[in-house]
Image (cartoon, rainbow, N blue to C red; front, side):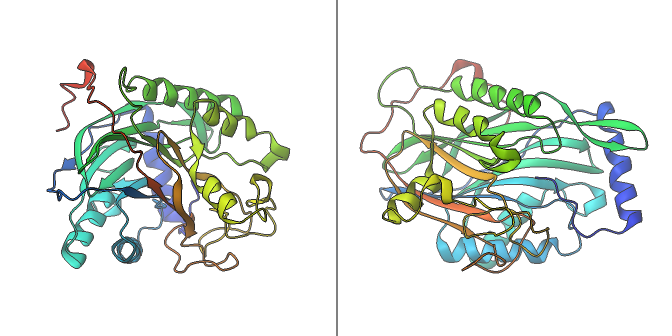
Length: 354
């Protein structure tokens, strides 16, 4: 979800001018850095997805430190980040790399990073999806989603390019898992968002292994669909994900742990009364319309062991502090008993990112 946060009129004018240039510039390649990992057998993986809010520039490093403190204290293995920012206008080359460096320098934690810049003018202002992982990244790839008009400025319709980022991680003592991170369009019609979601699954299905146990796969990010918004008109997009044999890992754990007190129909069902399951409308950086639009979907994993929404101080029993206009979704997934056989698609052997 693209909320503009607290910006001066002059600052917004600069951002708006940059987005007018989108049609003239394409995306540019992602970045990455390798790390060493241990050899102990891993039985579960903890994931976090979070939209970082690109437009809050002045306090960005403070917010990144808050995120790093949580990641370090709670042993998060893999981070899926949206609205990563880079460029001269925001005084950083890559805010995901900044977060990685804070984890290294202040917490002595090493993470791989991969980024797929999706929108903007190179070296001036661009947005990206990124994945940080404490596990080795075997390779990565990304793919563009259909462009749709999401902004209007001075009579111009502005098309924002979006991408889906993929990484294949090697889990010590287990084997490979695939992680996909995306950010679907916000100010667009449902047909356009459906087209983007279809493209995401076309991309995901290229990486399915053809033999052995299914490769465990995560799809996460800011999906910009909610089960109850617009009288439930967006629910078909959620069901589209489930039709691809993914499960809503957060909801599955919450419902199982609640012993009948929670169902899918009780998770952030009232936009005017936020609960602990909402991911927007629960921080100090956005309004009161509460929705659940950030997800971690899983396929081929074992039972979800834990799930929680954090950085949601305005929700009942919320977890402080505010770090974005979105809260983060955290899920721990149990690895299956049997690992998949390695099966690297030939088309990715020369992906140019390793």
